[in-house]
Length: 96
Length: 61
Image (cartoon, each protein chain N blue to C red):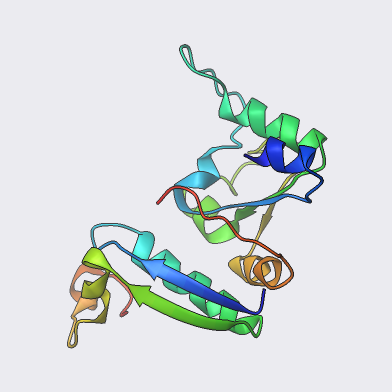
């Protein structure tokens, strides 16, 4: 969905919340399905801004290590999500 | 966007969702967005009066 939006000329930003904060974890090695962190990495390379919620990331232990996530993923507050929503034209919520 | 509708569709204590949804509401209000909350399905339990969430070390909703 994000790749399609980029191809159609949209700026895309992704805010990772709750269990979504597991997605950019380094060194994932799934055997029988695609590596979600690698897919996220390719989106970051295409200019997608990815931010992870600090409360959710901390609860899951990601803020204890120095480089928990792939390059380009910022860890910020949910208040930054409020600002993103404010200056976005469309907001899509995925998952539950 | 000028306004936001946050939909809460899960019961408050078994899942993180209702709690986290309300954090998003607070963030939206903090950014001066006109924010509404829709409680739907088991999300309606979040509005039940006289909850004693402290008994299980949860913040009061």
